[in-house]
Amino acid sequence: MRKKIVAGNWKMNTLPAEGVVLAEGVVAGRGEVCSCVNFIVCPPFTHLSEVAAALKGSDVELGAQNCAAEAKGAYTGEVAASMIAALGCKYVILGHSERRQYYGETSETLNKKMEQAYANGLTPIYCVGENLDEREAGKHFDVVKAQIEEVVYNLTAEQFADLVIAYEPVWAIGTGKTATAEQAQEIHAYIRKVLADKFGAAAAECPILYGGSCKPSNAAEIFAKEDVDGGLIGGAALKAEDFLAIGKGFEK
Ligand code: PEP
Image (cartoon, rainbow, N blue to C red; front, side, top):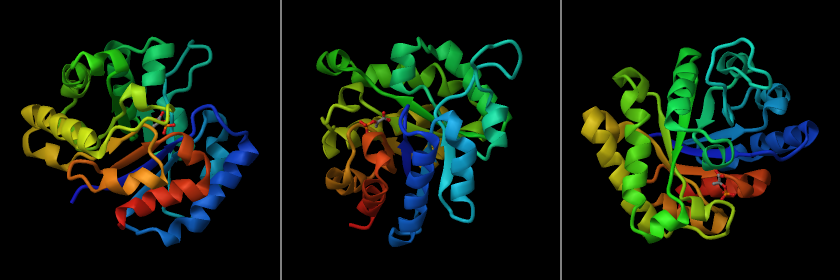
């Protein structure tokens, strides 16, 4: 049985006190959603400590949105994987399309970040996905395959057993456009096949999340697909009610 995961990527939103209120709202309503759903919240670095305190005693887990490629040292402005782990993070989002697009993250950098994550006991949520031009040119399969081969294929079997993948078509992120459940299933099944080509039967255990304008009204249909194991949620994760309602998509 693969883990069912609903992870919230808060991006660069909320002030610390607002983040605490949001986290408290998730904790307060969590009991209304199947305990089979693993909720993760990923606030900005600046809120991790306070949000960790707000989550204490609940099963809602904490993640960060990024980590440095190096362990420590003279890297002004960077935040090491060891630092976020020390604040209570269990997960780290790596390779988000906004990091690839605006901060020039390449597979080379991401290989180093993955190593840092594993060295510090963090589970990476590794994001893949094509942009609109690539989708329209029918290149989406090749794009995600390369993003997996260049990074995930470098993991050991032990590391791979502790990995979450998020498929996020760039054209669906924050645009209100969602992939259809059929489009999501088609590419999730393909991703699982690419993973199986390297890691064999272990690929059946890897959670693959869908991300891109996922909301309470479309989550159930997307999550019902065989190879979709939950969602990485942006905008709708900023309201506890909506975030929890997305988790309820697993009950329908
Ligand atoms: C994201 O950026 O991870 C995301 C899925 O955003 P949104 O849900 O807002 O499209």
